[in-house]
Amino acid sequence: MRDDASIVHVDLDAFFASVEQRDKPSLRGRPVIVGGTGLRGVVSTASYEARAFGARSAMSTAEARAICPAATAFLSPRFEAYRASSLAVMAVLRELSPLVEQVSIDEAYVDLRGADLDVSSTAHVREVLETLRRDVADATGGLSVSAGAASSKMLAKIGSDLNKPAGITVVEPGSELGFLAPMSVRAISGVGPATAARLRTFGVETVEQLRAMTHVDLVSIFGERHGHSLHELARARDDRDLTLTREAKSVSHEETFERDVHDRAVLRREIERIAQAVSARCEKAGVFGRTVHLKVRLPDFSSLTRSSTSPTPSRDADVIARTAQRLLDGLDLAQGVRLIGVGVSGFVTHAQSGLFELEAPVDTPAFPEAVGESSTAATPSSDDADPDADEGSSTLPQELTTRFSPGTTASWRPGMDVHHDEFGAGWVWGSGRGRVTVRFEGPLTPKGPVRTVAVDDPALTPGEPPAWDDAAAASP
DNA sequence: TCTGGGGTCCTAGGACCC
DNA sequence: TCTGGGGTCCTAGGACCC
Image (cartoon, rainbow, N blue to C red; front, side, top):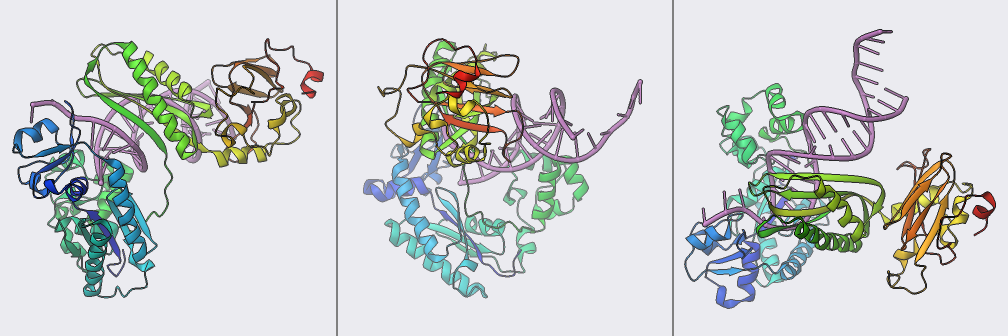
């Protein structure tokens, strides 16, 4: 914890609804609900006019319709518009200080220690926040933010929430313990409904009461990490720094059906559609994932998850779909299905694939020669370098065969067979194009014994897998 | 009037290796 | 002959956040 209030949390007020009211004057002053408008939709954001009637985020749209007046506008989200405004806000924050952690589309932390500013007095910090509010409004056509400044992330965030909307709160350094004491445990980051309910069984509802619980008890009840963090945060001990860069760890897409689905054929088709969306987003992000996840929500709202990890990173829609469909086959779906989702994680970026190639031993016998021109260690896979080189490209072979040498195993996608004999030598064989990933049996790189090569070389032998012999392996 | 969709992180158990 | 931990990877589920 710092001795100055130099950590700022900025939060846009009723963000989605405010953008709608800004862009459509007829909505100003009226209750606006942005969210899912279908049978099973939920509210993303309610304008303050709608909140007056009790509408809230995460409430079902049906319930919001029931409690809001007839003049209420129910709108589907326009994410492109929100992203554009979000970018404008983040640009304003980065002008203030380069140390910005964007938490979500409508929220960010700013570290004023990265700015050339006097943060020694609360009055000065308050002025900085007032200016920031005006700058955001100017840059976005009038959007409103709330901001909190404090000596830690948790207190800055509590501060930004305290006087919403358009509120500014500076938590005086030194006053943190007293500031926090009367608050609900829900104010603490990481305390949601389940933790709060559990604490209530011990008679604990406020932060002050939480402080009476021992570290040993909290850890035994909530586990090592969570218990420790409750103990520390209750005492305002929060040394978390801003996370300035973050890499995505998973990509997923899920959809709730308007009515529960009982037909597996429908589910398999949905998986295909969703896998295509996930694949496209992986491509956009430039990542390949090793693990495919399937999520199924049942009508009773319980959910099942299954995952499968392959040594071979992929973002191919067919591979993702087939893997997810195979995972689906193992589930009991007698109840029907409410939601289905597919995701990919365990990313290996293109750059990392290149690293593997460069670090692979250059004296591996037989294997590189057998796969042709694009197999040399320094050549990245050419299918990614050329955006036009898709399935339809006429220069590519319809069937390919390639080999790998003793001491390795291999896998090949999409839809190809992998064969090997008892010596470990073998071949992959089938139709299509893509990459071969060879897993060597000894450690080659810090990340693991994986090596990727492109195999879209027309010189590769079509047809039956050849008999293995050293002469053939040595000459492309 | 039943409860979205995008994520992250943690835990626990089993397999496997040292 | 039995008994160890520790570390890593994988899987399933759950809590939490916006």
